[in-house]
Picture: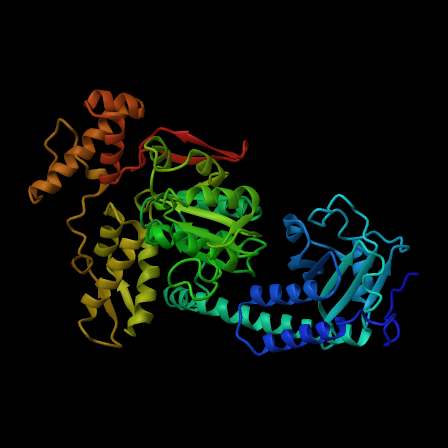
Length: 552
């Protein structure tokens, strides 16, 4: 007989000998857990474990109701992939009936509504698909449903003896467990993110975090490409020299995406110690290694539903690369010390100033990981290719410096503007920002509140040779005030450029003419501020093309 509403509070049959005490003990254990500080996942698994241990069931699953769907958060007796399922109540009448109830709901073998756990039972009997007994409890906080606890059994009489009053108590304790775990998870997320949030707020200022300043055609192209890639969930590889603003580009992609309301978690791969990198990215269980006193969520779990930025991806330790590849392929992570995979919904944006193809040739980076990361490639141009943007950015950073330092109005003189436009900016936008901050400090001289003019000499960039003034190989264009090191660097830069021009931009042919190995020429080019391979995106084909031209 089928029931989709709470039955009477009296048990259907007399409880098996000793079972009543076991139920009471299980309820007491759950109640004690509520007063104990535990990670959310541990709370959920202890709750499910207690129910599975005491009640005669083949499987039990705890689901959280979020975004209009039921998401499994803990289970016993189900196959692993069940945790990756999302159950829409509209598609599962039994779950809809549980959500709409005010108490326990029982389904027997005669109920014709489809079983939401059909085919998901594990163990020796997983080949038997028909669940003969099904019991569901709605978990509420106030009037709002926050989840359900479902028990199923292949035995049609498994739940006949269970008292509905005990089940209602179990439902109330389960709801309280979910509420407590929600606060625990919030505290953990805040602990991990508040330092990063403070740093970003200080750096960006309110409302400025995703603004890309510039009017040049080069940066206009970048903005258009950002608008295109932001609408998808595909992985993005952001390339460019140090200081061009790759992180800002990634933050703008996130801000314009459908994930904007979710976290953007930043990871500097170059700063990850190899011994701790796996734990930082994927988390660890208690006791997984010395010092792991409690379980800890990794960056991917913190970014669930949002975006993770893997900065300096070329520095990622080789031992972690296959694990990252699995996340990209299957959306699964595995904490250190755990044998269980966890589903995660994270968009990955990677950034690098390295030539990853060269890293692949040298065996330092996996080719399959590169192809997964570079579904969409966005190349950020160096500042020297952005026309008048250096002056525009100079004013932007002056305004910021004015607020930070509490000084009066700051202006650029015509000579200072010319200097900004002529400089080669090997450190790109980051260097420009620091130059402007130092210039304000020099120009104010401790005077607060007075108008300040920034002159060329305040900028301290007189020694930076403009790209258009690079001497020819055969000429005598070197400046008399250059040091030997500066003159040598300029000569090498000019020589490489001229040979490349003669070879139509073919790096391999240029290396043969110069008598050096191609990889050594690439390294020299990076040291000289050249970018060996300019990466552009062919949006008609949806994949990057390589143009073997120097970018200066």
